[in-house]
Amino acid sequence: MRFRAKIVDLACLNHFSRVINTIAKLAKTCTLRLTVSKLYFILNDKVANGGVSMWCDLCQMEGVAAEHNEIYLELVPENLSRALKTAQSAKTVKIKLTNKHCPCLRVAVELPSSSSNSRIVTHDIPVGVIPRRLWNDFREPSVPDFDVSIYLPVLRTMKSVVERMKNLSNSIVIEANLSGEMNLKIETDLVSVTTHFKDLGNPPWASEGGCLSSAQGRDRESMAEARIDIKKLQHLLAGQQVNPTKALCNIVSKRIVHFILLHEDVSLQYFIPALA
Image (cartoon, rainbow, N blue to C red; front, side, top):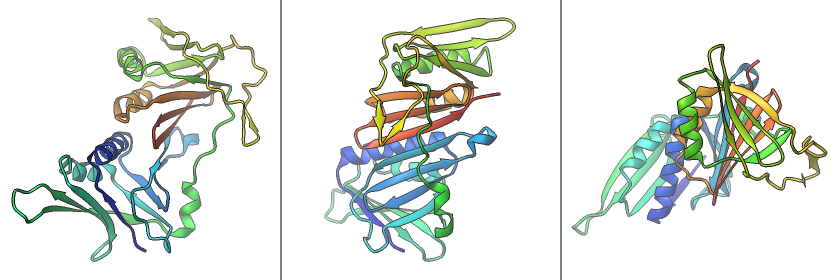
């Protein structure tokens, strides 16, 4: 089992660091899946039991060995985030899987030096190797058969609204329709607050891969809604550092809210189950 990768472009390195920082804020532990073409970061809490789940993929760095074209590792993303903080001005970063005393991801950071000799800082990050028989537990989740799909407002604006609302309630209702309208609502015995967003737009999902959503034939003004844990939503909004070019959510009424953040070669999916 071998894995080697190398990052030589500073912009790519900083982008990769931002992705890892985002993952570190969203998950204490996660699964890293390495394939020939992509890296995947997976959090697989059981949504049915109230847990969130996450799926993040980004295009591969140079170098998974072709004869071992998939590896699944369990790691603490915060450890990888810390290692990459030493690489902000690095010339190159090399990452490889080692197994001298225990399985580790070795991050070797080559730093600029005034002399002809390179300065290399090495971090060994312990990982667990997930056996092949468990790989099916970490497959990409299917897109829910949603009632409404809508583009999100500017995430910074949405974050500030949610942060204010979380002081008033433990839950928040997200509702949206096919006319580009979305509301964030909290309702308690003492207070009712709603923030309205208009003209957000709805993605042209139509039919992909033969999969039809239940949004087809739906009244465009009819709201689909789900009540979710406000802290889980705030956690997602506070943690993201990817600055997505597109952000949207799919609402399955009273069941789940599926968030999708897209930025160039990165896709982050986040599933928050509805409260009973």
